[in-house]
Each structure stands twice: as C-alpha cells, then as structure tokens.
Length: 183
Image (cartoon, rainbow, N blue to C red; front, side, top):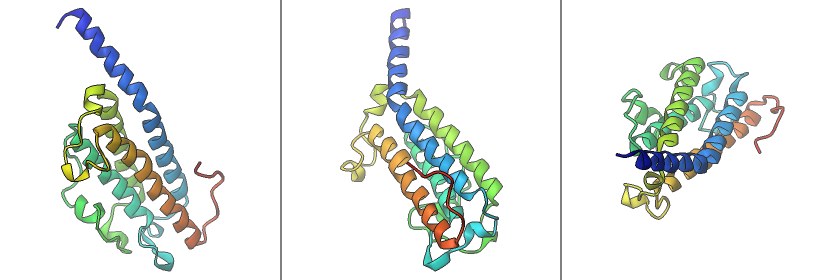
C-alpha cells in the first residue's frame, strides 16, 4: 500500500469516527447517568423488585454489558464474558431478587466499564464501509439495515430505555430523586 492509500484510509477511518462520536458520547452519557442512579444503592438493594418492577439495577447493568458483547461480536470483538451471561442477562432472561446469583455492584460496574471501553474502541476503529455494511442477521434488516443503524439504536436507544427503567425503579424504591435529569 502506498502512502496515498494509507493516508486515504486514515482519512476514511477518521471521518467514520467523527460520524460515530455523537453515538459514543450519548452512550457514555447514558451509562454515566446509570452509574449515578445506583451510586447510593447497596448490593442487596441492586436486586430489589419493588411494586413488581422486574428489571432491577443489577440486571440492567448486566444486560447492557451483555449487549456490548453481542454488538462487539458483530464488529469483530471476541467474547469476554462468562458463558452463563446470556442466561442471566440476555433478552428473555428473568431477573431474580437473589443477590447471590449476581456479581456485586462494584464487580458489575467494573465489568460494565470494561464493556464500554471495548465497544467504544471497536466502534472508533470502524471505517465507513464497515459501518455501512449490511447487518449480518437478515431477520433484523428492517430494524438494522446496516451496522451503523444497529450501533446507533442499541448504544443510544436501547441503553436509554434501560437507564429509564432504573429511574422508575428508584422512584418505586422511595429513593431520593437525582440531582439532574437524564436529558
């Protein structure tokens, strides 16, 4: 590859990173707000299910972490989570109120930070062609026509949905409101 081609490749990758920067920013903002919402919650409280609210914070954090691994697999990141993660945190899993079935809050937050770093670094390395490639699972093509669509929807929309669930959970738990809103 000559110098011109190398520079063109760097320019394409830099342009893709700039385009995905708002997505990664929103993803980080959502996860930071999630962390703030659970800062005052004990390990035992992390699995409470008040008023029938199923998705407790422990499950939400684990689910978002597991989702990063799923997305990572689509863009070339090797699996890193324990094999039982799908059973505990995947779509259709049933959150349990038994804290012994889960990691501690501190462990979960470390795993989430690792997942965030892995997926963010992988997204930053994608170029325009990779972002515009068709989503590999044809059953999702209507929702995710491209890798870019999947990354945007899952990292922003899906994350915000679950962060919002924790907001409702906090209210049901009678915890004080957050000092700022999730805007």
